[in-house]
Length: 315
Image 1 (cartoon, one colour):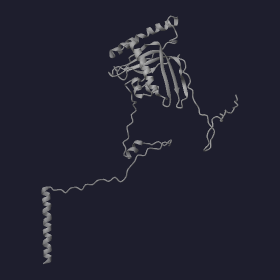
Image 2 (cartoon, rainbow, N blue to C red):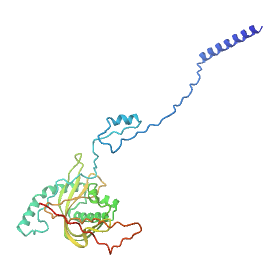
Image 3 (tube, one colour):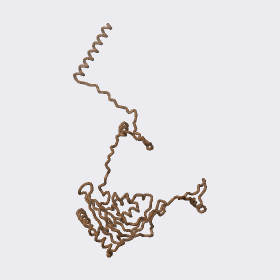
Image 4 (tube, rainbow, N blue to C red):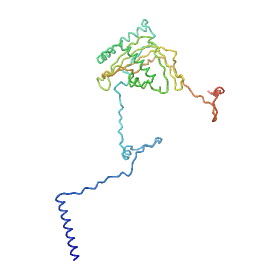
């Protein structure tokens, strides 16, 4: 009796399972696939090579970075350029030798004057191009404006006003004016003009593409100035605040003519070959003092500066 009952239950279970399979097949019922999340068990870091190793260069740094899971930045061989200003002075003005010392009534001064008139043809063409893009440009008024830009730029340099200096000088002139002045104190003063400034040279070159015009105007300025440079300890390195000097300078003022918001800025200076050499910089040195014990104070009055030992030189 028990055996027959067990067989009946087994038959009913098999029939139920077959009916369920048929129903799933007819209705296309699928069980959800179990969600599997990959677990990160190990972090991989890109370790750059050591700095002090010489002669042990990596064979393929891109493959090593890719194996570490880091995107290797593509290196470009092209150098970035700045189209706000030019890279230099196009066709620079050559000042005549003895300028500001020769009179136009003398024979040499008259020769220089006639040579300047012959070379002014290209400048006149450049001035016409500049006036096409800048209707307010005039040679007489521009020379005075260039002198104002020069004074404002040097005042901003002495005050270390970077924002103001960037608006008055070009990107080429800025590093030339600020290089080496980080720990120094500059005292500069414009006293007076010995001669009225005047425009002596003008060029209108293009860069990168034809029609991308830049205006470069050279202004001659003869003035009296004072300059004094102190190091970080307050010691005088160059010049003097009391004694003034007569300075003859040729300033190059530039503007990006195509840019409607462009402005005239100081671009550089032309130093003639016959100009006198600059004064040497007074360098300060440290004189070694005596070795003091802990708790001992230095007495400057009783200390004598040691003199260098005499050295016998043989020819």
